[in-house]
Amino acid sequence: MSKGPNTRLADLFALTGWSKGELARLVNRRGAAVGQQQLSTDTSRVRRWIEQGEIPRDPVPRVLAAVFTERLGRVVTTEDLGLTRHRPTRPGSTRSADATAEPWEPDRTAAVLTEFTGMDLMLNRRGLVGAGAALTAGAVIADNLYDWLSGPDVAYAATRPGPRSVITQGGSRPLRDVYEPGPVGPEEVQALEHAVEVFRAWDASRGGGLQRKAVVGQLNEVGGLLTHDLQPAVKTRLWTVAANLAVLAGWMSHDVGLEPTAQRYFVIAAQAAKEAGDRPRAGEAISRAARQMIHLGRADDALELIQLAHASSGDRALPRTQAMLRTVEAWAQASLGRSEAVSRVLDEAEKLFVQDTGEAAPSWMQRFNEAELHGMEALVYRTLAEHDPGAARLAELHARQAIDLREKTGLERSALLDRITLASVYWISGEPDEAQVQAKLAMAVIGQNSSLRTWDRLREMYRLSGRYQGMPGVAELRAEIDIAMPSPRREV
Image (cartoon, rainbow, N blue to C red; front, side):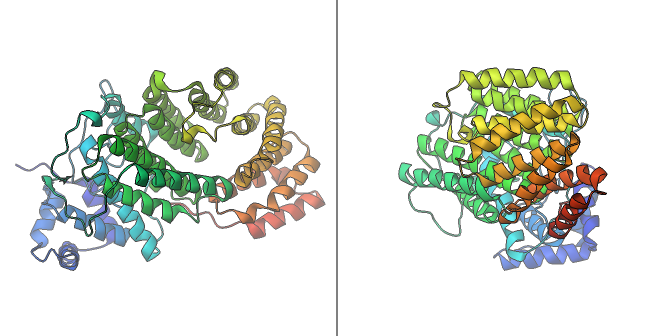
């Protein structure tokens, strides 16, 4: 019986410009190149996939994902092609699900993680530029993740090892790797955990552009390890490593303007954290997606996501984690000009923060220290100041406190963002001389980082300086920024 047209496959097929016969030949050629000479796809089969919703047997969906990825220059997975079953939205929801945000079953998480990172690495190798993708609404992500994250945690301690397999659209099949990894035990996992810290420090210092490919490659390897038989404790720690790496991959992708790719990594991170039984880590991952939405001007979507982050974290989240989530919520409220909500939520954040010494904080929360709290508060009040000028003084206070605290940490990129925030505050409050001082300090070091997100913040500061462009010093500063500013790059 026909399932009806596969609209997702049809839409992506239309973007390629191929005929059905060309797609059939490409599938056969790619299959033969990877040792699948038995593929005999023809035009009629392609028509059935598109018009009748027929799902081909493995490995055809993976081959299709590869050829679409190569053609469109962005990561395309089997889920994007509509070649998996859809899960329902949470009870009472009227929103439709979207395959790009749709969560897979827990036992497929490693396989999908490996597929997505493998496609991303292929784009890196071929030097392709992201195109044709779009961000999923925060409400859709929240709907699709809600039930899955609310379900019981995976209990690896009670799991008995079985034959190594990977789950595909056609069911479970034996795992056949190109190579067999050596034994994976606590020492190897510890080395991976250390690698996460190295990557995290680099990102905080210089931005994610130069290390993104390395992080994605490491995540791909961890995904492969997770499909093997491992001791329960080791597997749980590996899932935590996967969650941490996926957050970094997402944040670095956001940093260089690969927005839909970043969003998918944040969803992967939340699912990996859930596999590890670490709900607060899942909540923090979702809060990254919320921050991304605010940065891109979608505060309503961000509020949907931050509500899910709160729900996911539950009572297990330490006060410091809860404080961090509230700063993101306050930023979304500030973007919408809601002064009372901002004051209330930031007051809650400050009270929660002082309850927590940070000694018990997991590694992924260690960087949310006093300097980061002030930095976020500065950003929130600076955002609110465009709606309520009275918030400018509070933004200035917190920005200066953050800069003073960061001078001892070596987190150059974070200090740079604080400088840009402070300059923006002075443009808003009508103090162009002070604004120029801070802007010049920022310009002196901005070329040392690979973060396009930082340049986006500078563009906002540049916009605010526009009303003072008649002043000689301001005109010169704006000309300097014009010359230095890279062209915006986004997946669209």
